[in-house]
Length: 630
Image (cartoon, rainbow, N blue to C red):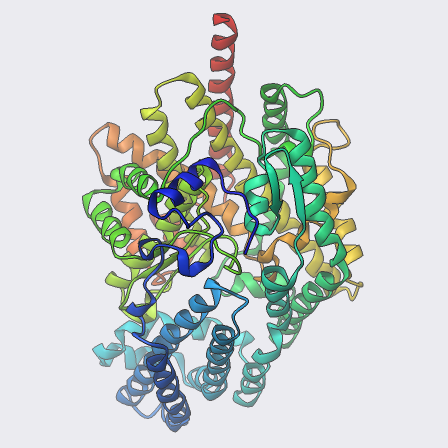
């Protein structure tokens, strides 16, 4: 059993529902109402196993359509109906197995189920490797003629157009089959890292002023904000010291994953791994590089925030381990899951009653798995299954950060729900580039709702400080990660060695540049060099930059919605909800432009920086007011 010490709020929550159930309790002791209901996917594991056997037969039957796509519109429709029907069934199978595994990564059977589902993903890719090459072998006019002639092909129009767009990077049927089979190998690095970091890594135990704690990933997130610097220093030293012990191993797992990305780049004839990744959603690589450039020229804004943090904490020197401690120590914003749900529902009121009602139903229907427990996957996410509903995983510790995470993941879930209930299955899956808009917009609405209800300046300072923390972690920090990821891939493309040691050297250089180490803004000790090993997103193939671009977009959209609400207009809200309902029926740049944001320019970024500076102006004014009153 974990020795994780609960926060006061979390402990009070646990004692209120069950005197024996404390934060970090074994999963079986967590009240059912705080767990998700996977029975909505399959009533029993036996039902899942039977579905898997049935799905294997359906996958094996798909090659029967090979060679017939060009015969008629009906033949093409039959093939795509079967293909997407299998894909939907596989999505359901995989989400169930993956979610079961995430409940306790130590458990062998759920991991076996997840691997079995992943194997079917590879089998599906292999069984349909001929599909795209066969579409591309047809004249584009013929494909468009089929779609015009058969209304049943309408849901597949965007899918077919996207295949035609990818013609230059699509291989022959036999080559595509080989690539699909290689899927069993290309995620090996990520799989090994996941097991090591979540289940096998011997996380340290450290004695703090409040007692002894075991610092797994969830506990580190909680205790890195300890009010005493001595405690924080111990937490950072112990946690990153443990990662340092596995620097070489984690360097090998990341190297394996990056090499898989480079392999894909080369065989598909892209100029870079970045180009290969962004091409999937028709995003210009200039957007990625522009973000990094925008952040670099805006580092003075980050440094202004860091100096403000140092002043508010009363420190003679700001250290990297001081970045998570609350700016206003006297304000304890703590929440039970029930309170967090109520606050989230109140915050999203500007999105309309229908949005609120649907989210409320989700809260009451066990969409969310709330509490941490030994072996549970760290972090938080939202996933979904078309025709069922979204599922959210949290590691709720009762702090404002956890409330914000609930609002964040609820934004994802509502995006999924609205897309799934509006779009046909083939266009329901929205691109990652817009995914984080829905989540960070909810965080923005939460902040402004909490500010509206704040009863004192200390609470306002706390909330505004949380906003700035979010801008640091989501915009600046994620862009730092994006630059690190780009540099690592470029190293691999040049056949430069990628080891744990070289990764740490690169990471330390970047983090010191961003945080102004050499200018005396924030001291970044050598031990922070291994922080890259703590970030699972580096295995996701140029994912993290989208947190930053989405935050920039959502900041602009949220402001437009609030301004419209103040003037009795729902135009901005309606455009935004239309974007959510559009799912993946258009490319992400087009989706955002329809919602009122052009991500190909620096204008949204500059607006976000203006808001960040306005918040610091407000905080300076509140601090001056408080100083004058003493």
